[in-house]
Length: 204
Image (cartoon, rainbow, N blue to C red; front, top):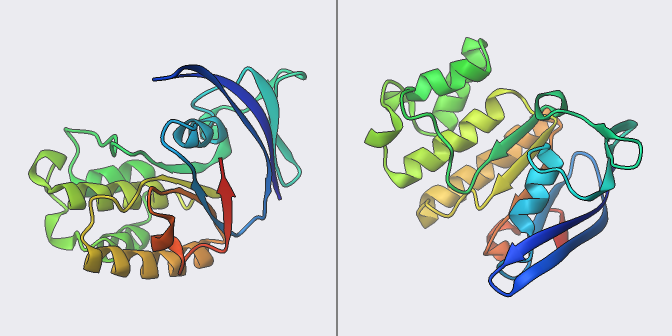
């Protein structure tokens, strides 16, 4: 079980707001996170990943405490073994497709499988600037999966994909998530597209 109880001040176009989340998420589940624009969906993912430290709160994953503001416990992002797919992809401009994956793992079999999954086998020597938006988004997904994450955090991960490719990626992603016994949290502006893959939901 992932137990989250956090509080974080945020700036929004309406001024300052407070993100309060108290939730329990089953391990090895796929949870869709949705809510109105500016409610803190991306901020919540960054807090879970350790990229943002909330004013106060606790995060426990199984028996491990990732965050406890009162006890001054805060695991570093690399200690959490989280795969993160950023909304803006956050790719390295000087790295080729295959170098992005080799940066995360030296498992050649796994890299080749991910390239096939992302339909990027023929583009593995290309740098991000030579990829379309959809190809860049697929690369961001592959890079997050390359570390075989314990938790996979996805921020609008299918927004640049056409309908056919989106369906293919979502179907095959479910197989990989099940195989990795990975807990997945997906932020989406269109939660209906996740009906096949998600088995839980969290509304902010």
